[in-house]
Amino acid sequence: NPIELGSIGDYVWLDDNANGIQDPGEEGIPGVTVTLTYPDGTTETMVTDADGLYLFGGLSAGDYTVVVGDGPEGTVIKTPNQDNISLAQGEDYLAADFGFDPEEIDLSITKTVDTSEAQVGDIVTYTVEVCNDGLYDATGVVVGEQVPENCVCVGHINAYDPEVGEWNVET
Image (cartoon, rainbow, N blue to C red; front, side):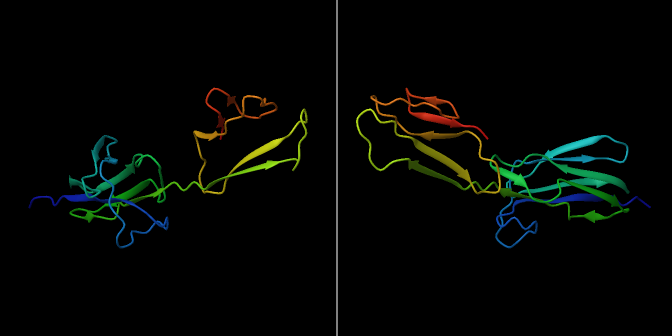
């Protein structure tokens, strides 16, 4: 009798509501690297197809590990990024699924001034505050504010470039 072989695989998807569950209408993600570690420690790598599907076939019974690589830029993994499977002889394990969530960044900018009236020669202080109420760090944020030629920007926390009128906001 030939030994029945099994398979491991399934789906990598965009978890739009970040609940870690494949909901109807949540699309598969193509081109994500998935790595299978065999019982002997060797590995095999593939990428998900156009529908976010992948399948490692021809597998003997044993203990396997599936690890998903990085999702598309601007996403974070919402499910565990690894699945440990004890595959029985002839078993098709099609529950090694991985969900990615779009990083949500919610920036607001508030600009305030310390006075409502200024005379010639008075020092007027503007405060520009950038706030991120999102779930993830915002990186590479640049705030544009052109300071008039007859004014000087002093006491700023982050680097202001008067040539282009921008502050680079660090994380």
